[in-house]
Length: 598
Image (tube, rainbow, N blue to C red; front, side, top):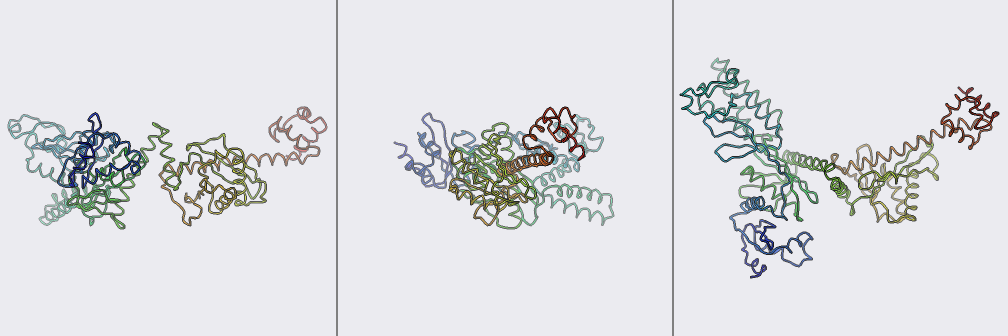
């Protein structure tokens, strides 16, 4: 039986399919609501497939499937098989690190501790926590209000009766009630553990209300000492929750997923909301091998969280609908209110993870970092090509004096200083930034078209607003370049990107590397232009001081400055030193004039 004949017999049922290569290795695992229809989509004419998918299909030698009861079951099975076989063409989790869990051990007097190993021995595990510091802070909080044991002793009723153990320092300083010597019953100790478990599950509000009612009842019975103990515990829990991320107790129990996708990577954040607070947050990264849709990646992410945390909340907030449905789970895309704010908070965490990942690549893999930054900039501006060659223009003048412009060049997101250019404004009189911008853009690219037309930039950045951008665009239009490259303006006040023909400015994420590249090239153009303008002003001031002396022309001025460096040094020189340059008669005139001016 051929492969196509075998696939034609796949059932119209939910399940998981597996593709094998000629050596029997699993190269791809996928889930489907309808196995027959989904698998058939791969075996169509090659021109209808993407390049990566066509390469994978060419490697398929065999296909098998497993039928399950529901899409949710297919999601979990797919997740487990991907972890087991690590197929070459599947989305893969980038995070190899093991996240910490808080464990409540299955003992008569349970321990509460931090671990990175989940052992199915009856203990209860809460997490995982993406922040070890957060998990440790939770443990410190529990130990501050509950007398928990910190020892590793195997405490049983028999061991207590035989007085096998002696109390440790924690017992003597009041941090432990001494369960090893029978000073606290299993029931009383267990009540503390039950409260800790409820706190870990997000039941803080209920416990606060419980302690408040006990406090009031003790006060009514005139047991003020006990009432004060309840008050202290209640205040400790309230203080802890005031430092955590409070959402809104009216929201109920929800889970939140967000996803940020690049060309080859995706970054997701999961938030678990219980009792009005964010009780869990986890970031995961995915490596995209095939041309997976965002919906498929989100499905993979949800499946991984379902595997780690078990059953999800009945309401799950998502940025877009995943490629499957789950029984007893309703996926929702919020459009306003507190739930939209939750989704934005989750997205902020995912973007932060992408930013940190990108920054790491700047040192570990500079080429990939550059590619990512340029891709991010291309997508943000809606360009067709990668902006590997960027040029930026800036005008500089003070009340119209010595008007100049600068052009700086970035190649592969880095300064190419040998390509920097200065321009003295020739055709514009006075402080006219708009006309000056048009002049230098026209001069720059008319010359480039004559000398090196293949080296035109993909992106031009104008330091300024709509006026400067309009005149720069006009110069490019006269040269017939508007279809070959993109030109944008970068306004400094709000760091907004202005595009030709768009009445609304584009705001790029302030934390993105794309905006940082634009800011860097704009600041470099400003620095380069200011330095040139300052040098011209200095030369003009020197010229005005020497040219006023009778008998000193341009060449004499140049010889004096070349020899002494400044007017002050000329004035301080001896008549003999100056006469060696201009002769004794003129030397006396120069020194008399300069020292008289002092």
